[in-house]
Length: 326
Image: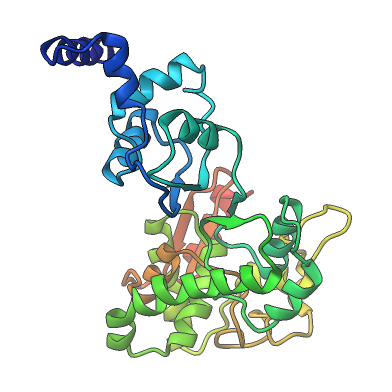
C-alpha cells in the first residue's frame, strides 16, 4: 500500500511539472493507446496473478498507457478484485475503462485440471463435470481407447466450446511437447524402449507419492524385471477391476482374491510389464522410470502413514510387513 501511494504521488508530480491539471493528466493516461481502430489481441490472465503484474503486462503489450493509472482506475471502479483468469480479446484502441470491464466480466475460456495418475475414464468424467458445452464423454472415451499414458496431466485453459476431439488433441499434443520432445535425449540414451518406460512410469505414478519414492520404486521394479520376477504391483489389480460402484472409486484397495484375476495386466500372474500404461503419469514418474535408484532391493511396502520401507529379500520384506502393517 505504501509503495502504491508513493507511486501515485510520483504521477501527480509529473502532472504538475508538465503544467497539466491532475484531472487532465489522469484522463490522458486512461485513453486508448491507438487513436484508430486496431485488431484485437489475445491476453491471458493465469490463475492467481497479481493486479500489478497484469497491469504491467498490459502496458508491455501496448494495450494500456500506464500500469499505475490503470490500477488506480480499477480501484475507482471497484474492479481490482474482480479481474478473472482466462483469455480475453483486447485492442489497443480500447480505453483502460473498457479493458477493465472486459477483464472483469467473464471469459469464454475455462481452466481445467487433469491430475497425475488418472486413467482416461477419470479424465473424461472430470471434463464432463466442467461447463464445456460441446464436450462428449462417450466420444472422448472412444478417441482415447488406445491413448492411455499419453494424456498429459496439467492445468489447461480451454474454450468452453471445446469438443472431445479438441480436448484429446490438447492433451496428446502437450504430451508430445513435454515428454516425447522434452525427454528425447534421455529416451534415446536409455537401453529400454519408450513404450516400456511409459508403462513403467504409469506403475510408478500409482505406487509412489514423491520423486525420491518414485526413483526407489523404479529401481525395485526394474530389478524384478531383470531377474524374471513378477512385479506384484497392486495398482495393476486396481486397473483390471475398474470402477468400484459401492465405493465410487476407480482405485479401490485390491483383495487377496484379486491376485487371481485373469488379465494380461495382472502383474501377480504375469511376469514383465503390462501391455500398456495403466494411468497417465507425471514428468516426475517418467523421469524416475528413466533414472531409477540403484539398489539391491526387490520389495517395498507403504506403512499406514504413507512412508515406504524397502527390503532386499523376502525375509526383510516380511519383517517390514510385521513391523509396519500388523
